[in-house]
Amino acid sequence: MKPIVQISLDLTSIDEALETAAMAMRAGVDWLEAGTPLILAEGLHGVRKLREAFPNVPIVADLKTMDGGYLEVEMMAKAGATHVVVMARAHAETIKCVVKAGRDFGVQVMGDNMVCPDMIEGAKWLEDLGCDFVIHHIGYDERRGIAARGHRMPSPLDQLREVVQAVRVPVQAVGGLSLEQAIRCPEYGAPLVVLGAPLTIDADSFRTAGGDLESSLRLICGKIHAYGDVPTRE
Image (cartoon, rainbow, N blue to C red; front, side, top):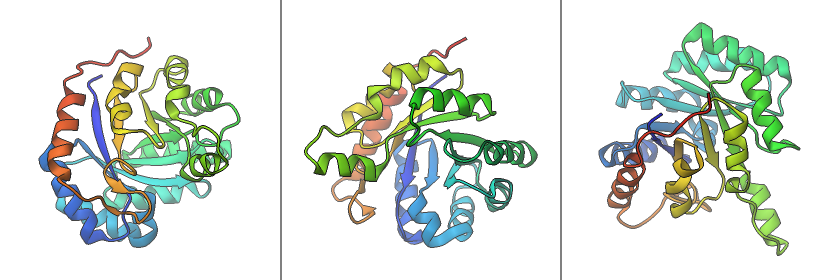
């Protein structure tokens, strides 16, 4: 599978999200993500606006669904989302409902293993229940809290190879990656590279980061796309 670059629009203003998305598209980003802050602030309206502005671009709705899975997927699909996110810690029936709705409405399902006691088993669980992708995710608060207590901040790279080897579906690593680490994700067998806080978004204010972001994104996209095919497990 060829690497895919996804930008997470972890913003609270649809106008700023649209501006950032347009810049990202010019730079070579493949997928847009309506991040959780944007969905909380703008809801279906934000996804609809992204779809209107970018009619042919895949849009991930980072719902982090924990319950009411079928309706959430239906609503986001009708608003224009092509991908939705369900949590591994949700009940199995919720994940099954999300997967069914995905099939019914033509949306692909990304299963997120954040805070699973066993991240590898969590990834396998998501695949077994029918998810199309696995997000191997170390949460924002978890990372910050552990670092504040003087311990090494955990990274999704710690177990990324094991997660990739445990499942057949494509994997994405999320959670505090540096720019260099994100670019290297395909080397670990994870073809879906997400860029967001803190790489392109100010992690504290949830606003677009300063500097020449477009040139930086163009360089990042070029390096990731140049990797070539990422082998998947047979």
